[in-house]
Image 1 (cartoon, rainbow, N blue to C red):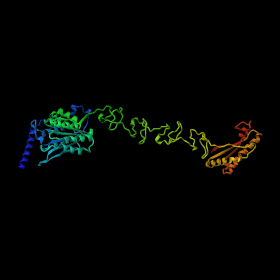
Image 2: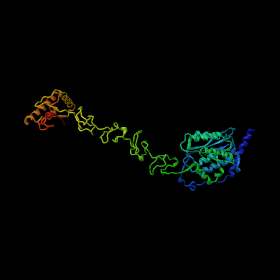
Image 3: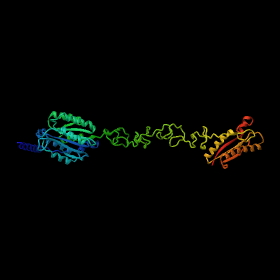
Length: 465
């Protein structure tokens, strides 16, 4: 009895196939380029996943033919209309497992590059309808297989919409939540069940797509419309950067600016300023920049803050490559304030950067050095030792008391007295230049006691080799 039942099912399927073939109508696909200006469109789908209902309900007749035959036929029409665009393609069916009473979903076609002939051949090999409705399981398989795919996915369900449950709707919603705008679920309703159409309508809308009745797209012209809606989208590029507005994250890019695949101008140094606006296109990572893409320079010294060790440099002051005011002689007084730019090493300086070199004063008609001044002479000696290329000029002076000839000799004796002390402290004679000027170079009036006291002196002058 069981064997007779199986034979009857086989014979019924063969009769259905023969009937479908006998009444099929020729189909001449519409050229999309004739119907649409395809230059205005771009490919939308990168992956096609067809789920074909081959369950028992598809064995019933609709318009004098079984629904599965018509479903295969409409897929064939779509296949003939669709150009071989760069796209992967899969066909999965669900229905009764061959020679058993069990139902299953079966992948009958898989290709990383959609081919018209291969797709058509796979459709023709699909057998007769029988078994349970396993759309939920087919969608679960699709979800697993597509999760690693990049790009946009079009799932096309061809079914009569019968014997479906809410679990099918739940999985579509879950997939849409996960894939977002990268997923579109579409449907072709086969048959005249209003409930079946309503279910597929709800299902496809949940997946961001739509459903069409088989009868409404069976002719070449509406089929071309269907193919165009599923696989293409109008290319709208407001800013003319070559990226469609739908995918353009920067839809107001100026004309002729090179953009990335997201439609945004390049920002090579990743500082947040696009290259075409960036005056400093090699800014290091994580450096704060101004609206021209250049590192901040708060003190305006020409050294960006991230390299500036002295960020409050006075305006106009000369600086080094670290942003610090230059102090060439290292005396603690910056060059722009330094009136003595070659101060000897370890010499004490005043606020103008000059060596605090004390004038040595003498009593009237005397050449003896006061003992209180010896520490100062030791300081001079130390500076001379630290600066071997430095010579010292020692110049003696007198007040105007006495004859000029006497004063000249006295001034030289005063200068020599100082030089002798420096010689005793270790300074070589060739580093000292001694001279006397008598009373010819006063620094104060000789008419007063105080003025004459100031004029009785020895002065020093730095002489560099």
